[in-house]
Length: 155
Image (cartoon, rainbow, N blue to C red):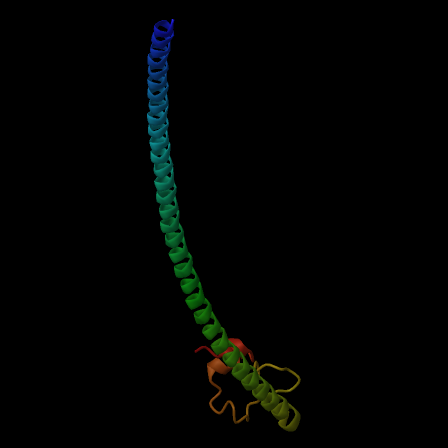
C-alpha cells in the first residue's frame, strides 16, 4: 500500500503542480491584461490632458487677442477724449473772451446812450444821429442793425 499511496501522492503533486501552473498562468494573464488596460487608460488620460492643454492654449490666445483689441479701443477712446477735452478748453476760453468783449461793448453802448444820447431810445444802430462820429459819411452799411452778440466774432 505504501507504493500505492506514494503513487497517489505523486499524481496529486503533479495535479497540484499543474493546477499551480494553471493558476500562475491565469494570474500572469490577468496581470498582463491589467497592465495593458492600465497603459490604455494612461494613454487616454494623457490624450485628454493634452487636449485640455491645447484648448487652454487656444483660449489664452483668443483672450490675448481680445485684450489687445480692448486696449486698442481704450487708447483710441482716450485720444478722442483728450482731443475733445482740448477743444472744449479752447471753446471755454473763447466763450469767456467773447463774453468779456460783449460785456465791454454793451457797457460802451450803454455809456454812449446815457452820456450822448447818440442812439436815442433804441438799443440798435438802426438810425444813428447825423452828426454822430460813428457815422461821418452816412454809409449804407450802418443802416443795418448790428447784433451785439457772440455771433459777431468768428475765429
